[in-house]
Image (cartoon, rainbow, N blue to C red; front, side, top):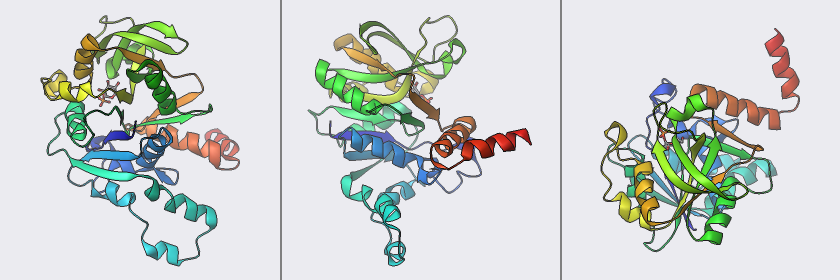
Length: 286
Ligand code: G1P
């Protein structure tokens, strides 16, 4: 898997005024833009050709992955800072695809597939969903391993409370091995009573090339938009799709909403800022 598609065309109305001029994908979690975490995850899984699907006002995302402006290097950067800003741009091939108008996630991914070689499997990574893995491998690395072992598409799943089902695509399936299920049914944002499953699609996918053909024919679904989940339902009728259920050591933050974004920053600070836990506890006490 050498390609990943990152849909990044959303407007982030929820984050106004911050999102007025700055693409939400560049909002920092501590000192790193959200989208850089996603790109690093892609590289770690071997997908170094990164396809950004975006629209007007999002050009800064592409600039971010250019060589750093020499004005920074002219100063005496500390070695660790230099490493942080200089290495990434050499590791990826940035490919930009335009989504002229918002027509849904499936439409964005379909646009992205135009630049992926026809016979290749590829990843789709939703940049809102930030994943911190504490184990030895990342979620995408595990998915890539499973996809190679079983030669099929794999999507990442996480357990959510029953009352949150309506916010996600939900998968039903049967166990194949620890943490892996054979998906039998997929429902995009189910209404109450439509499913008993608590396994939600969390925004990481590895697809066989067939999905690209299906996406070109899929009709608008929920909300009048072309849904990726609808294309996956068609794929499921033809091919196996496995679900990789993330373990309890993996933390997922939906940075597309205020709470998730704040928590992601707090979590990163707890991991990296000395004494942060004590300081935040003091702040809460006050
Ligand atoms: C999309 C997908 C949904 C998935 C979710 C994860 O929904 O359509 O299946 O569960 O991402 O964040 P969105 O968040 O774009 O509404």
